[in-house]
Image (cartoon, rainbow, N blue to C red; front, side, top):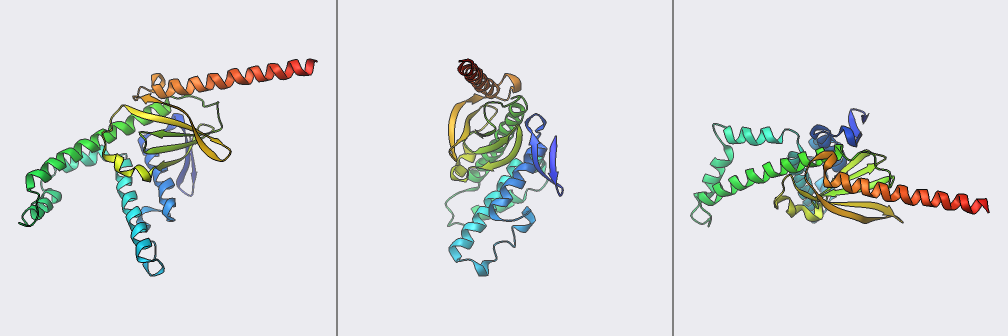
Length: 244
């Protein structure tokens, strides 16, 4: 089930998550960071005349990062990679030839070509990473141990979940450079809850996209069981106390 507002998805149930809804939630959550309603507004946002040079650069740099992130989160990314590989004429190849033709430039075309192959591999690994996340989120079942939970994937993507509704998907900009570290179907995760207004980590683990049998699902079930056990003990204590 998706909740929409003026044509924009504002939340989606964990069991209904897809790459498409993941992308839409990411766009909704992250364009708000810089105060715009859609990515088309990035080009003219910020009103440079009202910003200092440093501030304008920072805002524009953030916008460029978000544009790149929107490409990474796009549910059509796999097809985008294949279209680039199979293109009759590759603009980027021509650009790299142009750059390497400069005798003052210390890198040759062979270096750039190797970088292209590595970048394609990084994008493919990223797609596997996202597919694993979607599979595992769909398989976690009911989250009962806390009303509000934040799950961080691979140290970079943060899902805010309330009553099994995914409300926000944020990217940890502090760890932006880790985007290019190896990703794949296996990933680390951290689970946070709110305590006195602060996010506190309560569990960590490794998962692999196996859905209901994943490490993430097992950890959620474990936390649910602890919560239910403590709740039952507390209810029994209250009953015994009132009995006296």
